[in-house]
Length: 237
Image 1 (cartoon, rainbow, N blue to C red):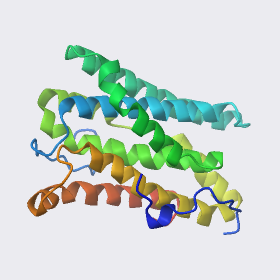
Image 2: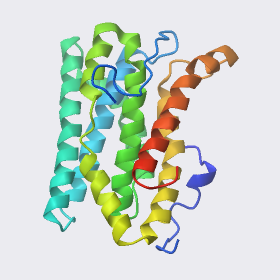
Image 3: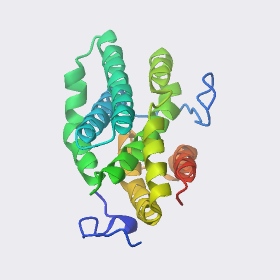
């Protein structure tokens, strides 16, 4: 993992002082087959990410006291699990073994989940909302490179089921303004690691100037989507 400026001292103790369905909303779908991940990478990484989001959200349910919040977490977790199962179905439909395609990504994506796991439940909820949103957008944007398979992946990833998480976070901020600065800082810290996951999936490990220009709109759109999510939470991106 690269340590970005806003990711330093994550382990240090902190206090609270501080789209339409037809076109997939604002996601820009691009087609650059020579740069897009190999389809095994595309499907295996996407499927394992959804499994990780499900696991993280499921772990938050038991320690959450409010029944309405438990329900919101269960809906978000269930949506991630459904996406995972449907992506696994796409892999099997192509005649591939889902475990074989996902296994290469287990270690790096588990490390990503650990790096973006907050010290407090609200931070972790924000982590899932932000990182899942950015990476869903990433896979949606690349779906045009994979023909019918990509179209099916776009259908699977459309919609997030995380509206309840947004409600939990905004309610917490309304009840205690100290959360605003803390969560805004945490949201900014998530960007670097998330972009590294997306960048690492691209086929070339080193891009020349022309290739960088070609993929730039994708990453610009990911950052714009991040800013919109943060703004919807009343946080500065």
